[in-house]
Length: 286
Image 1 (cartoon, rainbow, N blue to C red):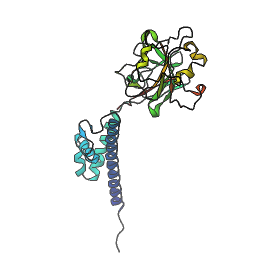
Image 2: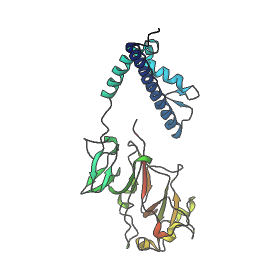
Image 3: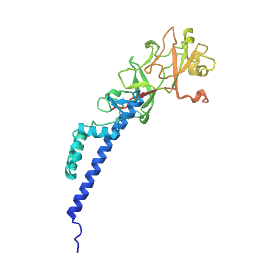
Image 4: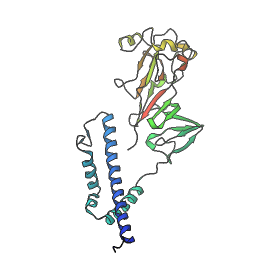
């Protein structure tokens, strides 16, 4: 009569299977990281390479190379029990070097999702915004604060309030500093979903490719109270796109003296349904 499998042998086999599972899981994580890095790099204008590596190379091969660079490649040739030991040590070491991804506390009624930071004790300091008197605000490169209206962490975007326009002057409240300018050393830029309207412009604006016709969105804005101070001035609109700077909306005396912005405008939307704001996007931290 054949003896059944011993409990010790079963335990060894289960340990071996578990270690193989964990090893494959770690391998897949590394592969996933490489894929994400490649996709992010492709989206930002360098579709052929990342860190000088041609993306046509098989990503599994890159994952093996990464394992080797981390000193984990010898695990491929070890028995299951030793693999298990090395993987546990590796994961514990990895976790000990991962910074805490602590989100900052709410500011008023608004959540402050990671990586946005309102202090040195939370978030990522490169993504600094400010909680002033219970209101979230974004600081421009010129030192002006703009109220944050909404945050979409899954899309890496936030919307700030456009400057006020003087009803008697048709001047934006940030005209004295030349409009909105972002610090180009920080990971924020102006998204391409903003339709910017310029008001009280000089005739030189007519030489530009902007829409300054009677059908421009700015003509509709002049008809509401917020834009009434600019009614009858030369105005234009344009969609913020890659051909223009993604870090600035400029106004000046002798050019255009006021502006506002609408996010994701639709031609069929009435002016009272426009989503007024300036949408900024940030690069996720890696």
